[in-house]
Image (cartoon, rainbow, N blue to C red):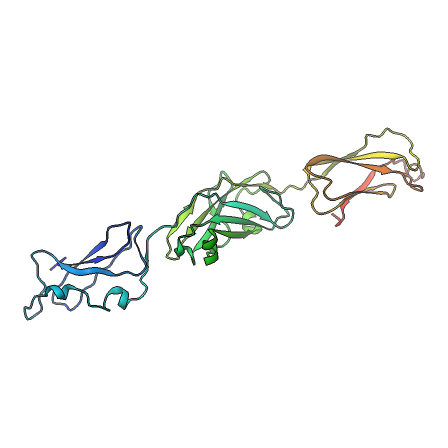
Length: 315
């Protein structure tokens, strides 16, 4: 007879318990599949209470003996949790707590909100709910796009650790190669970010697109000009001459000195930290005894000029 026996599974506090219906025809056992529903949750799946026989129906053995009330109770030690240890039901999706994903470039010259050609990777900080232990052993997949293109995965999936859940956040590092492989990756492009978080059971959810972004600038600045505010003329030893460099865009000097080499062989050194978000930078050249330009030395007609600009590291 179809649907003669009904068994109730405990599926957590959100959903009504799942009722499975069984057919019995001259068998000593019967089975039914249970499909986990969204928001079902039970760390140790079990059948609740005695089984129920549909009203008007009876369960008899081949000799005609009817199953008694006490026969409908599952014996101690014979329930699901006893015979199949750790049937962990988790149909609950990971929850985005609404904290925006943050990001910071790593390696080379780090500038907040920027990704430049010296950076070697990016750290993404993804918020996690501290009370969701099912996240441990799950994964975080970073997803990015540069408009007008669609979303694409960047880097491999990061495995969530217990310490990440305890801290309420995980730091996912993505190397430069997949970032620079994004369609439309170029200077002035804006990298937008979200994440797909998957728990240990395989339930996944997309974290919202972050309000934080990275703006791409991989165009190296150049020297646009070398000029002077000093008047034309002949300058003797101990005289001061202004030398001004113009840059192709606003620049900042990171962790290095900038040397201006003049055609008198003099070197003007601009110390690290003295160039910060400027399009021009001036230095004062004091003529030293024995220094002279090629025209004074009758080598050529060239007057004072900048021969080379380089960092202490040689660039």
